[in-house]
Length: 462
Image (cartoon, rainbow, N blue to C red):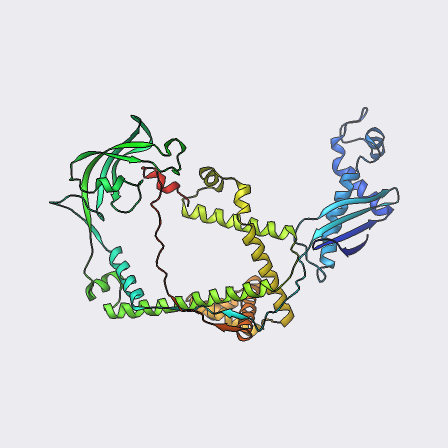
């Protein structure tokens, strides 16, 4: 087999493979042996007719397609291996037949390949350095969350329901005098003021006494997810069965010892501050590195083949499906899309821009690594293995001994990436434009528009 390669359009390479008479005849014989059982010929048992007889009955080219498949499978990947220093295939090729005669065949494959990157400026750029600061209020907020996690519900006596109470209610909803699906429940624990029911519902439960029954009149929002209920007036027959309030424990040394294992409140605060400062530093460094990557990627030019984008979207969709299953008890992506009134095509398209950015960034990073010649020595890989073993509380020597080639390659990549970002940070102009709080205040959200049935909470994949 003779072959040649030549650059083609849009980051592709055309591979032309030429097979001589002997190779072509051998491929046809292999095709005959693989497929002869498909052909029936009078006078012969199925699969027993000679090759030339089948060709007389079905046409001279009856085995050509399979013969071409044989040649492709035997030689295409061999060519890729021989040319691996020159290009890397990133998708399946488009095959075509350029010539077939009794003297041989010519098969071409146009394959998408990893494109070359024209780097722009990647040093001397002004880039925002992100830093987060930990304030006393952040530490106090963590302490408050610990207190909240250790709270308990105690019965409310001698007063009506208030916001913040947990009201255990029976309810039955109807529209135009008819009950609707998902509108009935018994002993439902509702935190008043949480906004988990449709607007106006919880406000009318406030003020009720235990044992009291009441009709709650509300209107479903115009953008409610159930089409048949959008904008409809509804009446819920509500009974308040039980009323409880949250009781918070006193924050003192004894509480901290039981709840967090720290010796004192001050010791716990010191631990929290140290943890938060470490997290703030890591978060700031990660965002600074993202700013660097965005800046150097914007300055680079590269023609990305569609196959690389599709492969990245595939990975992102698979990751989304995995997270969906983990978070919502094995929910399938198809069920989620059906529930959300969407489809797989639109879901994939939602990832396209991010996929393009991810692929371009990765290509730019690889190009800079190659240009600057960053590599990992055995000593540096061992040091990274020891660092990981220490963080995982494993025996470092045993961990290094057990590490296989793929693990060492993984840690070699981490060493190289560390070198890359050390270089980029040292050779660009990083400046803090504004210090940010370690934790941003949560944005206020509109009340979730759910059906008044507990089971709906699990379905809400948003």
